[in-house]
Image (cartoon, rainbow over the protein chains, first blue to last red):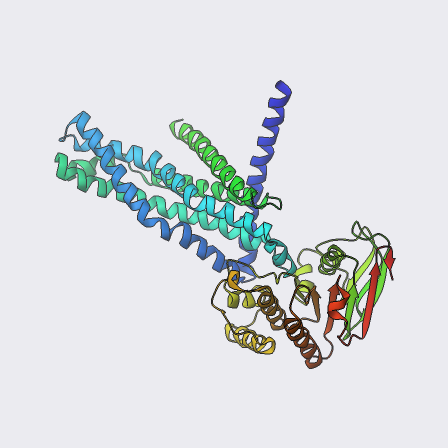
Length: 258
Length: 217
């Protein structure tokens, strides 16, 4: 029993180290791609930002509006409509520190994580990774690196959209329903919103994005020869991404409190 | 100087040590006992696989001895047409043709497009250039892959099972394209790899090497 647990633990540690290596390798490959002006790599990166970022904007804004409204409604129903200062303060704590990066990460896992894992596994089964090697194009710098950095960029941008929309849009809806006064509300926001807090939120988002992309690429590239492994790879990628994002979120929140 | 030299090459896919030479500028064929052997030869030529013993030399370099930075410089001088074409499924056909040029060659967009268009004219392929390759037949996959290789203007062209599994007319077109390109570019070495010798019997090879299960034939 203890031996099995130790084995699982060492596997988990080596997987995390491998993911760290993939992310570090992506940054090294990016530097080399910029130096050597690899235009196709830039095209893959921009396509990934478009797919994971731009195409997800509508769903992210809708979610932000709903979540912002729900949280403000809950605070107003507990503390009363006139407590605008407290409402702004609590909204900022919840949305910027926690919910923004976390909910956007969950949407990105569902939309892009599954797509990346399925796409890479299908490419591998079809022999396209071998074809790239035959063209002298390394899989790591052409397929993996732009996806890791693309999803990292997209998740960070989406978090900004989410937080702004949740704070402002949610307020607009709630002010109509519960007469929350704007001046008190914005005073509450700026009493807790610091540059450090915003940066921490963005760094957290970027980290989530890098980890999600690395997990999904790793699972996509790990398939064998059977097409039945494609959905399995996608499922594994989603579950591992969720677990790691929640773990990271917990660790970073603890760090924030300390 | 030979374009390709295998000297006592032993590796897991070969039953015995393999030795042969193909001269620069030759129109050559290697008949292998099974397709796995031709895939292995391609991988050895490109430095993706390394021999357990012996030496593989290609275009004056030994791929197994090249660094990570040097190997792509050799690989871009070798054009490979894979059995299934080897097009990338999430890129349109035209993007597939430009991909190796964009990745490896520091030439202008205009020059790349001119090379791509010339290569497409040379192989006679004009259909569905702005569609994903999933819509193409096997023959069209190979035509597009042939155009992609021609556009790179490589020193060595390797056709891995180029004619297998196709109708006679289609085989004739692909073989004709390969022969015409070879004649237009003196100094270019063309190598057909096949496990089905009937498909290449009618071609005017300068050299034909038969690898049997036990080693060189």
